[in-house]
Length: 350
Image 1 (cartoon, rainbow, N blue to C red):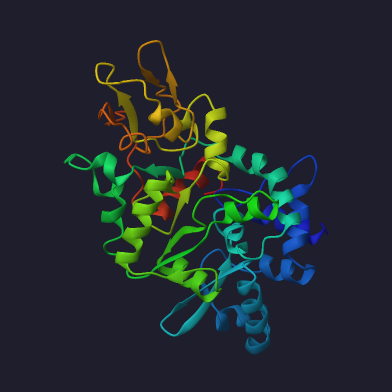
Image 2: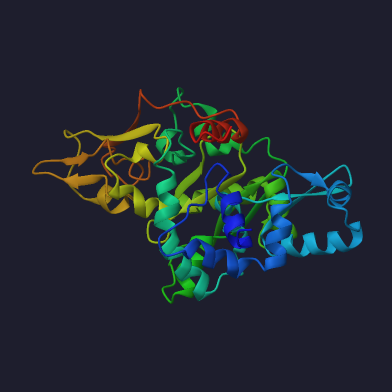
């Protein structure tokens, strides 16, 4: 029989975002750091859909009390997902990304950060193997003010109005940067979660519950800092990040691609009116993906590199910058189940 970590790697690779093997075996090193052999065997026995503890115990022929203690320990360590429905505690296997690595927040040490530096390019390459975009960027509120054609799913303040449970916690990427000795200057607690994901992070003492007013203040402050609002390519909210290019692997990788749309659903592009542009350079400094360059008499935006975050709009003193819809952009999926089913179908796993 294969080594338990090799089997766990194969199992985790069947999730939509995958968990690829690498020439150096760094993916196995990460699993060994997070899972004991007993943890790995139990994770392999879990389903990808939430299952009541009593049903898991019955299916595995184990005593519910003892099994519950073990699963709760794994959930607290961020390697199993736990939620509650109607008084029942449910558990399921957790994908590595998005999921397990974010659940390591407040547990990240130098070793894990260095392992992730080695593994991240292989994980990021998974997104280039399918046409389905799982990521999109929501434009800054000030960039779409007054635009009546902007859909509600591109207005974060509209998206969150019906959310009952919202939590904010530390940024995983900034934490990894910090343990390597290079502290990020941006606000630390900017990672948002919603619904059952919020409850999971609250229960694990990673995040704290916030109200709508506090969330609006956070979003405004994040925009002022030049942070990019990144979420899944669906109308349903689970996790949203306020990302900085100095720490975020996605923002760091996008400028290296021929087109940002290879990795994210880009709904807008910035456009600069050459008649109004005074070459102040504020938009260049503000752009998180190096999509704006200075020409002889104006600034130029690369449509291939622009992600439509809108952060270049508000700083322009001449109001020369505006967002325009990308006509070829696809609509976000209705929910994450549809989005991930599309990925699984492309990978031949559905």
